[in-house]
Image (cartoon, helix red, strand yellow):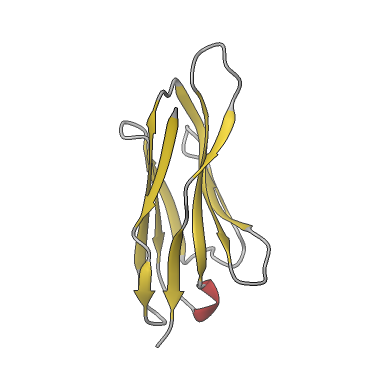
Length: 121
């Protein structure tokens, strides 16, 4: 079994910063991609940022130059450093990890439970 657990959400003022963390644990053979999605009330879940095992990154246009995704492959952990936060960044942030549990198993996506980020004065 695999567990994906996020942490680091909370309330922050506009212009502030916040760092999210997400750790995958359990039976893991290899992790290819890790990423962050978010979902605001009434909106669809959208990709925020992703990072491959080699470190290639991809960002939504709305967060480029404000958010930075990174990962520690030794800890199966991905981070999202969020700066210059805006009220429109308010959402539940979900971590997704694409991994294989063995050398013969296909890749699967595992989602965390989500962490609330609220940007408000």
